[in-house]
Image (cartoon, rainbow, N blue to C red; front, side, top):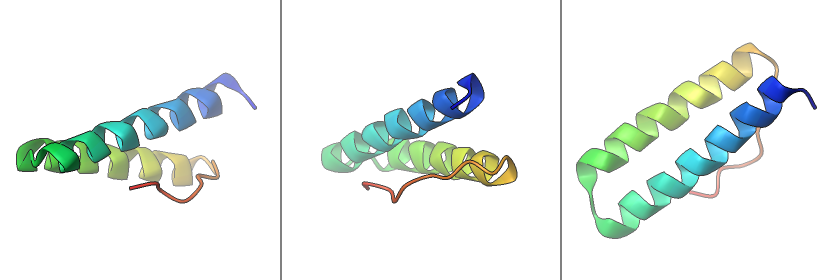
Length: 57
């Protein structure tokens, strides 16, 4: 796995964790921010053929 793929997957995992935390805390604004970031990361992964496992959120 190259550095781009590794970094992208790490960012996705971190964003999923942040999104989960925002959901748990009931922070609607942060949920929107993290969900948008996650959507962008998934789009980027798809554009570069990076397989992403099922989301934990």
